[in-house]
Image (cartoon, rainbow, N blue to C red; front, side, top):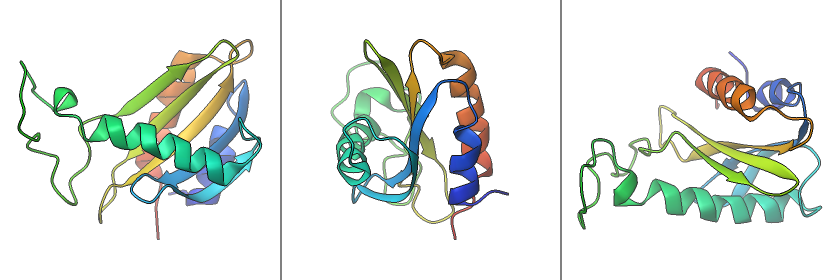
Length: 140
Protein backbone atom coordinates (compact mmCIF):
# COMPACT_ATOMS: atom_id res chain seq x y z
CA UNK A 1 0.00 0.00 0.00
CA UNK A 2 1.62 3.23 -1.14
CA UNK A 3 2.10 6.28 1.03
CA UNK A 4 1.91 9.86 -0.25
CA UNK A 5 5.32 9.90 -1.97
CA UNK A 6 4.76 6.55 -3.70
CA UNK A 7 1.28 7.62 -4.77
CA UNK A 8 2.61 10.82 -6.32
CA UNK A 9 5.40 8.96 -8.14
CA UNK A 10 2.86 6.49 -9.49
CA UNK A 11 0.52 9.12 -10.91
CA UNK A 12 3.43 11.00 -12.48
CA UNK A 13 4.07 7.92 -14.65
CA UNK A 14 0.80 8.58 -16.49
CA UNK A 15 1.20 9.95 -20.02
CA UNK A 16 1.03 13.74 -20.00
CA UNK A 17 1.34 14.14 -16.22
CA UNK A 18 2.74 17.59 -15.44
CA UNK A 19 2.31 17.72 -11.68
CA UNK A 20 0.44 16.21 -8.77
CA UNK A 21 -0.33 16.87 -5.13
CA UNK A 22 -2.09 15.29 -2.19
CA UNK A 23 -4.13 18.01 -0.51
CA UNK A 24 -6.23 18.35 2.64
CA UNK A 25 -9.37 20.07 1.35
CA UNK A 26 -10.47 21.41 4.72
CA UNK A 27 -7.24 23.36 5.33
CA UNK A 28 -5.98 23.79 1.77
CA UNK A 29 -2.54 22.46 2.73
CA UNK A 30 -0.48 20.28 0.40
CA UNK A 31 0.56 17.07 2.15
CA UNK A 32 2.89 16.21 -0.73
CA UNK A 33 3.71 17.55 -4.20
CA UNK A 34 5.65 16.48 -7.27
CA UNK A 35 6.38 17.91 -10.70
CA UNK A 36 5.21 21.29 -11.90
CA UNK A 37 2.45 23.51 -10.54
CA UNK A 38 0.07 25.32 -12.93
CA UNK A 39 0.89 28.69 -11.38
CA UNK A 40 4.45 27.91 -10.25
CA UNK A 41 3.54 27.63 -6.55
CA UNK A 42 2.41 24.26 -5.17
CA UNK A 43 1.05 25.74 -1.94
CA UNK A 44 -1.08 28.32 -3.75
CA UNK A 45 -2.35 25.68 -6.15
CA UNK A 46 -3.25 23.42 -3.21
CA UNK A 47 -5.26 26.21 -1.59
CA UNK A 48 -7.02 27.05 -4.85
CA UNK A 49 -7.92 23.47 -5.73
CA UNK A 50 -9.06 22.86 -2.14
CA UNK A 51 -11.70 25.55 -2.65
CA UNK A 52 -13.02 23.73 -5.72
CA UNK A 53 -12.97 20.37 -3.90
CA UNK A 54 -14.72 21.82 -0.86
CA UNK A 55 -17.46 23.41 -2.99
CA UNK A 56 -18.13 20.13 -4.81
CA UNK A 57 -18.01 17.97 -1.68
CA UNK A 58 -20.42 20.13 0.29
CA UNK A 59 -23.14 20.56 -2.32
CA UNK A 60 -26.40 18.74 -1.64
CA UNK A 61 -26.99 18.44 -5.40
CA UNK A 62 -24.14 15.93 -5.58
CA UNK A 63 -25.41 13.75 -2.72
CA UNK A 64 -25.73 10.03 -3.29
CA UNK A 65 -29.22 9.16 -4.34
CA UNK A 66 -30.22 12.78 -4.91
CA UNK A 67 -33.35 12.75 -7.04
CA UNK A 68 -34.47 16.33 -6.91
CA UNK A 69 -33.95 19.74 -5.35
CA UNK A 70 -33.12 19.68 -1.69
CA UNK A 71 -32.00 22.23 0.84
CA UNK A 72 -31.01 19.63 3.43
CA UNK A 73 -27.44 18.45 3.69
CA UNK A 74 -26.90 15.04 2.15
CA UNK A 75 -27.02 12.10 4.49
CA UNK A 76 -23.30 11.41 4.04
CA UNK A 77 -22.21 15.04 4.53
CA UNK A 78 -21.48 14.64 8.19
CA UNK A 79 -18.16 15.02 9.96
CA UNK A 80 -15.91 12.07 9.23
CA UNK A 81 -17.98 10.71 6.34
CA UNK A 82 -16.53 10.60 2.84
CA UNK A 83 -17.90 13.19 0.42
CA UNK A 84 -20.47 11.88 -2.08
CA UNK A 85 -18.27 13.10 -4.96
CA UNK A 86 -15.62 10.73 -6.37
CA UNK A 87 -13.75 13.25 -8.45
CA UNK A 88 -13.91 16.66 -10.08
CA UNK A 89 -12.55 17.25 -13.58
CA UNK A 90 -11.70 20.73 -14.81
CA UNK A 91 -10.81 21.07 -18.48
CA UNK A 92 -8.74 23.98 -19.75
CA UNK A 93 -7.46 24.73 -23.23
CA UNK A 94 -4.03 23.36 -22.33
CA UNK A 95 -4.80 20.61 -19.84
CA UNK A 96 -6.94 18.62 -17.47
CA UNK A 97 -7.11 18.85 -13.70
CA UNK A 98 -8.49 15.83 -11.88
CA UNK A 99 -9.28 16.09 -8.18
CA UNK A 100 -9.81 12.57 -6.81
CA UNK A 101 -11.22 12.28 -3.29
CA UNK A 102 -9.55 9.74 -1.01
CA UNK A 103 -11.59 7.83 1.57
CA UNK A 104 -9.68 7.52 4.82
CA UNK A 105 -10.35 5.90 8.18
CA UNK A 106 -10.29 9.23 10.01
CA UNK A 107 -11.95 12.16 8.21
CA UNK A 108 -11.82 11.70 4.41
CA UNK A 109 -10.75 15.28 3.82
CA UNK A 110 -7.96 14.49 1.35
CA UNK A 111 -7.83 14.51 -2.43
CA UNK A 112 -5.21 13.87 -5.08
CA UNK A 113 -4.82 16.62 -7.70
CA UNK A 114 -3.35 15.51 -11.03
CA UNK A 115 -2.51 18.04 -13.72
CA UNK A 116 -2.33 16.58 -17.25
CA UNK A 117 -1.13 18.10 -20.49
CA UNK A 118 -4.09 18.03 -22.85
CA UNK A 119 -2.09 17.07 -25.96
CA UNK A 120 -0.24 14.19 -24.30
CA UNK A 121 -2.61 13.00 -21.59
CA UNK A 122 -5.43 10.50 -21.74
CA UNK A 123 -8.22 11.73 -19.48
CA UNK A 124 -10.07 8.41 -19.27
CA UNK A 125 -6.93 6.42 -18.45
CA UNK A 126 -5.78 9.01 -15.92
CA UNK A 127 -9.15 9.00 -14.15
CA UNK A 128 -9.16 5.21 -13.86
CA UNK A 129 -5.56 4.95 -12.67
CA UNK A 130 -5.93 7.87 -10.27
CA UNK A 131 -8.95 6.15 -8.73
CA UNK A 132 -7.03 2.90 -8.31
CA UNK A 133 -4.08 4.71 -6.74
CA UNK A 134 -6.32 6.71 -4.40
CA UNK A 135 -7.95 3.50 -3.16
CA UNK A 136 -4.55 2.09 -2.19
CA UNK A 137 -3.19 5.31 -0.67
CA UNK A 138 -2.26 4.96 2.98
CA UNK A 139 -2.11 8.10 5.08
CA UNK A 140 -0.19 7.69 8.33
